Length: 363
Image (tube, rainbow, N blue to C red; front, side):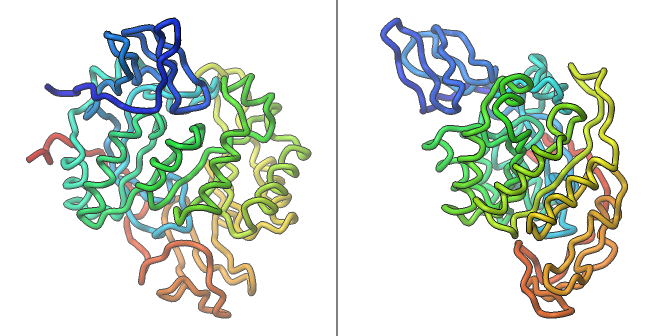
């Protein structure tokens, strides 16, 4: 059957017969046949476990530049096959993918794509990696990991674009299948996470520390700055100081511009001056690579050598304009090895976005 449900782990049966999901820190309690907030994980009808619904159903397939994830230090210039599913385990009022993450109709409208089909498509399209994105691979972890296995068998790498809102044990399993991650650090206060995301900050910080200190997954961070919500100098000071102290100065940090969307249509777009100031604060606190995004700003989207200041990678939006790195990622000016995952030469995908009819790659 297309879009089957499969039994999954990370649950406990409660005394009253409900199933408690232990995948993410939301710990949804579900009566038999009912779904959690994420929409795709459901208590079995017989009350004897939990299932992932719509396995093999996904949406939004397209080939993107890796810089769009955003990842600036992971195979620059390469192409990545991106896709997601229905649902999400957070409820962000500013969600800029709400047509996918919040829609209950996506499962019915999405394409049928088994893991081997996705891996085959990525290989034939010349993609260096596959990105699990748009909503969050946390909620469709088993599907993502089966796809990751199929991709690795074909030499294709795997990228998680995630909010990092996941419990400790499944965290280990998910990221064991990933080569790179961009973690969406939505703010640096519990108040924001509670008010705007129906979530909490601490598990996300735990995920970041785990990725940096206990895995080889290349990790970058994105924070969407929303006027009047998470863009104060005090909060940015605290966030960037924490990244430098707890994760390391070489971890790239992207500050991106908000545009009115979903349930925050009355909030103004982020001024470019706010992004520039946030970047300055990060650099002042010793971070080596702080970028701005969702605006046109080539000077602040370039990768600079932290030692000599050479523009090692110039960018115009998602297009690479200059590349001054040796094959091992060393600066051509002074020999400093930049943090990241670099190929012998940069990719040449550019800024293109190529939609993909995934079912055409089925065996």
